Length: 216
Image (cartoon, rainbow, N blue to C red):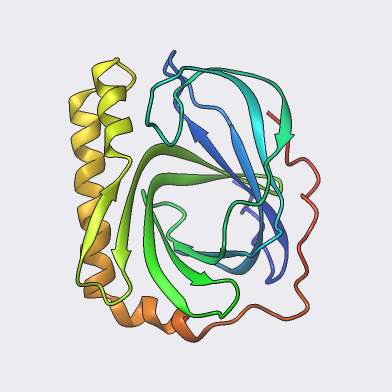
């Protein structure tokens, strides 16, 4: 098997989440242009700042009042530009073969670290300049000092269980993975907190999406 190429620091990749639709299939539905900070066996570190490009694939979605993400019924052709929505710089760290990613959110104006965020995703599949991952919709928000944390969007996961998109065992495994991710962050806090002082290369302007970012 030919080894997959490692990305160099500063290269731009398309970070693409692939949620499960009503039929049980996964496909890319959202893409963010991100810069590679580190790409080594067992550790992938990516960065995005304000103005970095975001695209959402056209789709047929349900309507559930109060949900942050409406359920995807079916993915369609074409993509739309997503307006800037974040006031943060985001530095993401994960084992690309793992099942979660841990991000440090920092204030885009002051650069001050604000909180940790865990996405229950993965593993990552490399397709050219695209890094595709399974997106399950459940996240964890952890205070910067690691004293308190909470699940986010659990209501959406429970809706997916009720409506047969996920089964109970799959949902429980996601909750367990979230708890394990928090425990890892606390246990290995020095490994993660080394990034508190990190700053992006000042030459990194908001990039264009890499070639092939929209391939499905």
